[in-house]
Image (cartoon, rainbow, N blue to C red):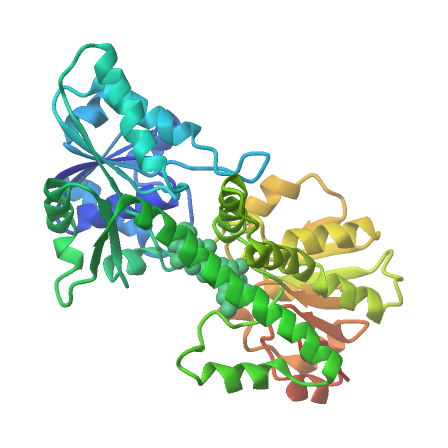
Length: 443
Ligand code: UGA
């Protein structure tokens, strides 16, 4: 099949590349001509394991094409995906200007009937607005062409995006047309062979499914973080509690890891947008409000522990930080808890000496001009001259540490672990004080 994807961000580029890899002919379109010319040379703008090699390979095979020419993009296929960004508006609702601009452009340029599939995360009712935006262009030029629509939200996780697309838990398709349903079944057939993972539903239900899924996952995390903070007050170890509750299959082990709060480009934005949708319909989304406020507090949690430990005297201290991206296997710094932590430390007069396996370039872009930030090339270099170590992201690379060496190097002999990576007893045996989330301090 031939398919065009508008938007070469995470979702667009991963979807386009994986569809091309399965044998479809894919055109990826982006208004950023520089980005397109780099993509044509196989340079991808994000770090995502496995993606770059696939872009190069499918480019060579002739399955994957890139353009910044909207007319070429619209003319290429009858099935057109919108996967452009929906940044939050000032009031927290999703800003649809890019999505609707693409729809308008399609309506302006199409010369046969087309199907527009919305893949961006968009509020309920947006697919209908997409149809109207395209259709109004057709009406304006007196055309009798028809636009069909579908909602096909994406559930991939950064860092595991290729695998998530290739082996999906579910393929949600919202449509009101039997013909679109047929198109989508054919498109996803290569990823849907062993058992049928396609769930076809109404358009509005598909749109809400995406938000409900992310909001539920964010809720699990905030719930666990709140229980972790209580566990600390009660002298209970949250890691034992986590094992205890995760063993119930109705709860499950996934997404109940306490930490320094969720970040990234999805959960914070989607929780806010859903809350806003509720408000627009006269409904107060109490759970979501609590999820968000618990998360905002949780991003400060480690800073509170640091302040407590030092009796608020951290001016002039040097903190080594391991891990800055919002989670492992990505270079994404959007809404990363590390940012809140670094900014609080700087405000209190401390110096940060940081290392991340992938996010250094992005951190340099964000904070490069600061005098109180030193970016270093290895985890060991971050420790040199540091008073204490903070762990913000649980990269695999940090899981095994030489605690004896840490105790010799860190002058205050203390670790603040925002991801509960280590066994407290092992850390303590080396003579280090260890703070984690929901476990209390251990000395
Ligand atoms: C999330 C969803 O997991 C995907 O299913 C969804 O498609 C995607 O958003 C999206 O809407 O595009 P992602 O933002 O890549 O994916 O990252 P997650 O792996 O979900 O992690 C989000 C945050 O939650 C991270 O900061 C992570 O550290 C935190 N987290 C996760 C916890 O604090 N505890 C956990 O147990 C799990």
